[in-house]
Length: 115
Ligand SMILES: [Zn+2]
Figure 1 (tube, rainbow, N blue to C red):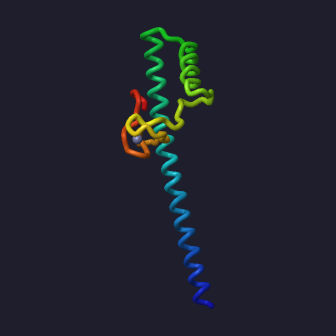
Figure 2 (cartoon, protein in one colour; figure 1 turned 90 degrees about the vertical axis):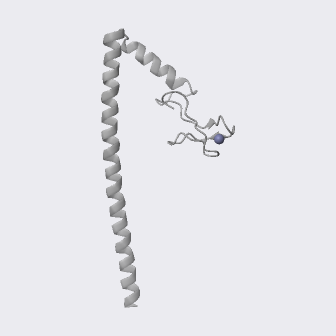
Figure 3 (cartoon, helix red, strand yellow; figure 1 turned 120 degrees about the horizontal axis):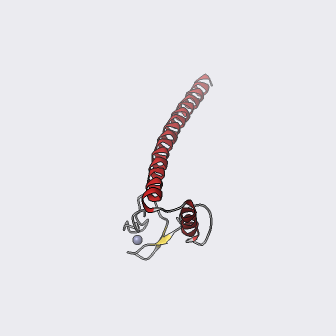
């Protein structure tokens, strides 16, 4: 009886330690993503500043283009379309994964400079 309780307590302690480690790794991942987002935001602001100053584009033009791109997938949701696509190689429908490769055959599904 006492041995079973000790074993159960040890298992609970291991689970708690794993959960604590998972939480720590999740915090680290969020911090890295936040830093990456900050760099991307700065790069976008710098590019937009250049486009306005050098080429004379306006905020209105940027907004109109953003809406057109958003709506290109049939829904206005504030995102670039990211639904399943047809693989150019095997012709199966595959979710677009971060790897940019077809789930079925591994062929590249990246289109254009931003995938
Ligand atoms: Zn494929």
